Image (cartoon, rainbow, N blue to C red; front, side, top):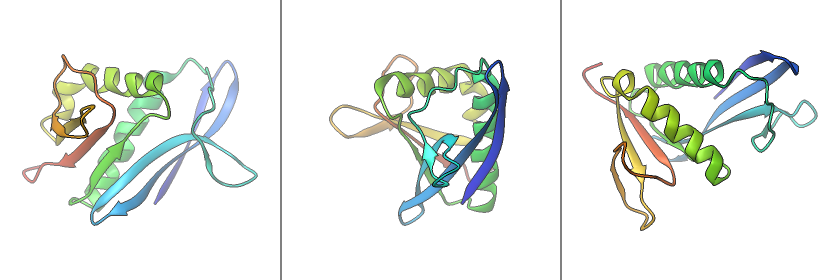
Length: 135
């Protein structure tokens, strides 16, 4: 399932795509980035630098919320294409953790490939979110 939105900023209007790709039973890889209009694919290594990262991250949160309304059993896997992007995702999870945790259980992937409940004091290689049953 794909969602489309626009990033508006000093570099103009840039079309974005966010997509959930199934990777297992009820497990989806979440990817987003610039829309490659030639292929229709995600260009997830492009740097837009449109000065709207907070708006983009808020949109991503809304997209994940909407997707899990439709598929409440879905586990959402998120990993940056590089360490800097993974760190950006972690900083945004940290920033909004009080808003996220009433709705989602969030896990972080450790270097030994094990998952633990997300902790602010740790650095993770990837993230997994699961909608709580009581929401």
